[in-house]
Length: 367
Ligand code: GLY
Image 1 (cartoon, rainbow, N blue to C red):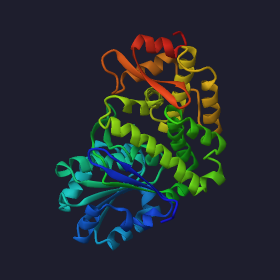
Image 2: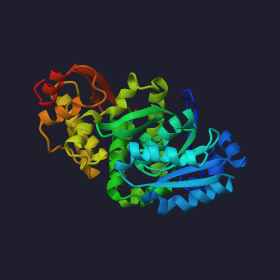
Image 3: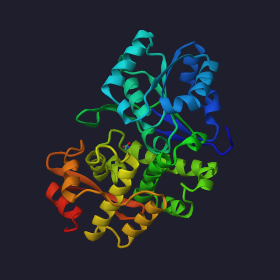
């Protein structure tokens, strides 16, 4: 554990800490909350869920650390990739836990990115009506978004995240060293979510990201910078989530770029990754908002320049009609109204509820 570790307390109905810093996977005994350490000392079970990529990198280390705390470790590995966030894996893991006689006083540890975290969280929310789980995110996207805030889910054949629950983790431990082994394109995907925080909430963060391009090799090794940037994002998420834990109002703002982005992912048959689709979605909606006079002139270009500098795309290979069609199947559509998150300037977005036809006009640059 280093001196530069940051801890952010998330004061939701079930509160918890998010620890961010270098070397934290080696310090879990000092970071886990008392009730988890008690479960370990009592010889409880730790169900360690990870994927085929992360297992070979950090599986052994985490197993050893958990066993050292007193846990009886049950490791289970899912295939890497979005396909594993399925009903099939969910049922397999429920059966695995039942057959191993995992009880309500045992703990799930999710070691990996968003897929591992979302699936493990949904298991924790539903196995025996709820058991504790700890998030150990190993991707930038999971660090700044999916591991914090308690959204858990699996995908259905009909769409992404259609079955899920709100379940806050007992603790989040983000070891920034794990980001070193991330593939460059997966790291850049996470940067799209980081840029989102700059756009929706924190103009100063946007400037930091302009001055220090995180995807450049020397910045990727800059642990202090990464810890600072991730902490800023988590702190923004904290501020939003404590106001609207169940996503009925302001939390929607975290979906900036996502309504169009989800449609892009869907239209591409999920060939375009989430981060890249969100980057395109943010650029498209900002340009449309600028044309509609909602957003200050020049912001679209500034955002496009930043995204491009991070190697992220800003144009989608689909028509407005294709995009709208995909947007209509988003689970956030209510009736014929759509909530679009629209920037006014850097660091400030608003939620605009509009008819589908107005959204179409706006995206076509006619409103
Ligand atoms: N990922 C958006 C949210 O947590 O609300």
